Image 1 (tube, rainbow, N blue to C red):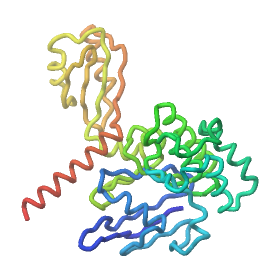
Image 2: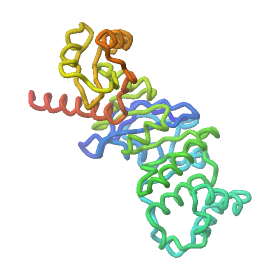
Image 3: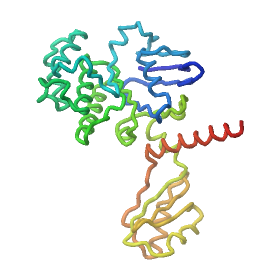
Image 4: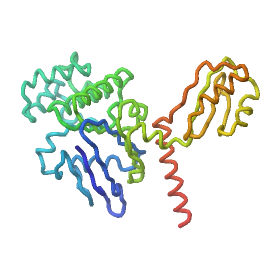
Length: 317
């Protein structure tokens, strides 16, 4: 659905995006992550045809994409991070959506609008003026506008920005439902906990370069330097962590309250050996769980490693 080859964008001497290669198949929820200034916005603006690449290629739906390809642009829905009110502030939500429905020549527009308003919890305010909407309400209205014409690809930039916890869940459920119906969804976000819950695949961009790109599970597994086992006990006897460190496969051991935390090489599963060790000391594990690397930890690991690399290179230069 979305392919780029050596996608590059320069602004004068500054390179915002350098040689980014994406290959996003149909039906995926794809997370595009990076710190501020990493090149996310420039990449999205090129994918949408708003700015022209300095170099590289973009293909959408298997075809070469150029801004003049209105037939391809029609198959895209966009939810920007900032939702313009401007000249529309005097309109009601229903009038605003009806205007876009007419532009897209949507059949049965009133029914489609009512259906989408109901789905995001705005049905009760359809006749309220946009100027009176909160930021969260504007966010939901923007999502409806993007879905009106039933696009094949939905681009979302910080989709949960400004939403309360209930609104975040509503938006998450809507994204998952739209994806189950076959829609490909491209999300740029800083809310890593949400991305971890919904994305099939993620990419991490830093200083214009794609640093990592993989399925969520594979990315987290590959970045983990070791395995962290959490063992709940009634209490952790003094000296037990030091005893565990005598085992050849234990890299680190310490207690946190009544939980024993043991780090072992990620190449093996040592839960059985740990259980036998504890039972041999008349200690009964209440639970043994492996803590997986979170997306936030992976994000920090990748960006910090590259900050250190660029700092070292700069110092050597």
